[in-house]
Image (cartoon, rainbow, N blue to C red; front, side, top):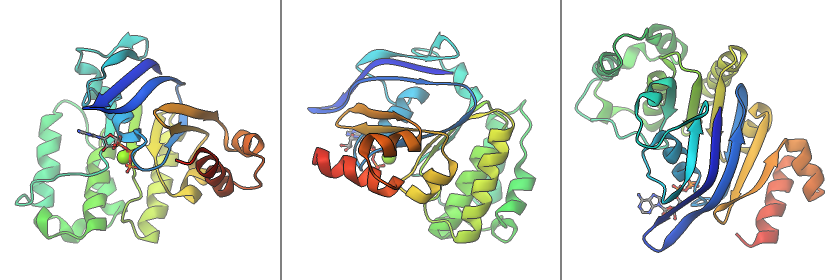
Length: 236
Ligand SMILES: Nc1ncnc2c1ncn2[C@@H]1O[C@H](COP(=O)(O)OP(=O)(O)OP(=O)(O)O)[C@@H](O)[C@H]1O
Ligand SMILES: [Mg+2]
């Protein structure tokens, strides 16, 4: 589904991605891990065409994405930080995004109920709490039916019940055969959800495989220690 070859990106003198080669197969949950600033969001934005790489090739379903834009209609994307226009009401924003993607069915009602957002629909976005904003962010992401779902830190700010609902939502999408790419610093979430992980370190892919393979590679008994082992032995 996603093929990345020799991807390089620098911001000024900051070389963030130093030759990423990565293949993500169709179907399943893939977690992109790595310390703060390791380039996870940059990698995701490169796939979406929101960051233009210096060199390298990105293909989606065998087609190069460079210079293209239509392929984005096939991706649901949850940004790490959603900059919503504060003076809009929640329902106005949802309707605006639906209008922008007219022609596709939006399943917003079910999601509004799932995240208990009815009482907030007439509130302005600037007046919402962080967690409630994140729930709006999730509604906007999941309301369209796309084969690829990219979630940059989806659990941020969510209370335990919303966290459970999010996990159910992701698993429901996975059961439909979708490909779901997630970044998260919540190791328990990753361990529970991910079929495969990719660990970014110093601009390269340090590891790609299952959590069990990572435990074997690092000779650690559990996932958290396996990740800590990578970080301490690499001095990242
Ligand atoms: N638009 C930009 N202009 C300049 N530097 C940038 C820009 N976007 C990202 N960077 C830099 O690129 C590096 C990687 O940032 P990125 O946001 O991809 O990291 P991340 O792995 O997503 O981190 P986090 O875990 O904190 O979300 C950082 O050093 C960051 O400062
Ligand atoms: Mg990030």
